[in-house]
Length: 340
Ligand SMILES: C[S@@+](CC[C@H](N)C(=O)[O-])C[C@H]1O[C@@H](n2cnc3c(N)ncnc32)[C@H](O)[C@@H]1O
Image 1 (cartoon, protein in one colour):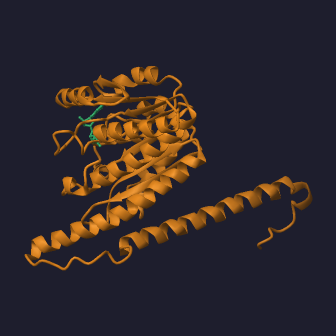
Image 2 (image 1 turned 90 degrees about the vertical axis):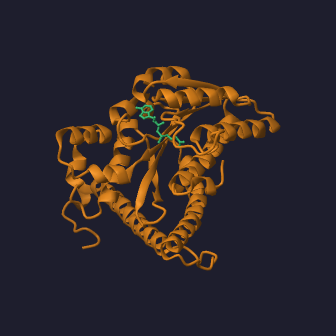
């Protein structure tokens, strides 16, 4: 993929692409090594806001290049899976560029471009992937077009994983807007009206992201759903969250390995973007120091996540203790709880 310089003032997109590139490589390699087929589906493919004639800064080119290199790597291991990439794009102009990019692409990846909306292409996508293991990338421009009902058949597939760009910043801006059409579209996005009670929550971001993850988990019957937060380059606030759903604990491990690399890149990129912004505003150049360990925003985020993990473990242990206690209820119905 293109270096971060190509992504000036949209560094969050670079981080999204870095995540996609690294995770796609991992999952395609693992599946390609042990299966005859692997499919990648870019449900909202673009191209979108590209600064490169060859689309090197789009998910289309990034995925094709990475899948090709995976295929070459697997061939060296004497593994020759069929690797397919399916792209869906609604805008006619963007679709024309997509088709051209696929025609010009050299490599052994089998590609298919589907014109129209994701919603109207769901049946074709499902038909194309069949029972092949598929990785779905859902990267819309806002929150329309990917209602929980639309996602359901994709999420329910037994053989696959999904990565969704949950546009938190965008959604958050419309949360308090009490208009029936706006509320209805958010109901469809979450697949529930419960988000409405989160409007006044003290930690709205966590509450919203957790609700969305829970909806993805319940809709698809996924045992594992997790997320990674991508921050705004100049502010300590989230731009979006990448939500990841899998049926395999190994997937979570790999997702976290990729996240570790992306977080390091994010820290460096944000430090540079913030220094350049200060220089622009003050007109004074600053010395370029190597970043001095993780930022305060990163440390606060990490501490919060560790607190969440601790609470989760206590909750799980408490549940387990309650199950054991109720299983032995005939003997201990009147006995006090151990901790009392
Ligand atoms: C955020 S851009 C995708 C960017 C791309 N994934 C990347 O990372 O380079 C979203 C794309 O989805 C297209 N789009 C919007 N609504 C859509 C829908 N309902 N179905 C399919 N494509 C849609 C837009 O035209 C736009 O090209």
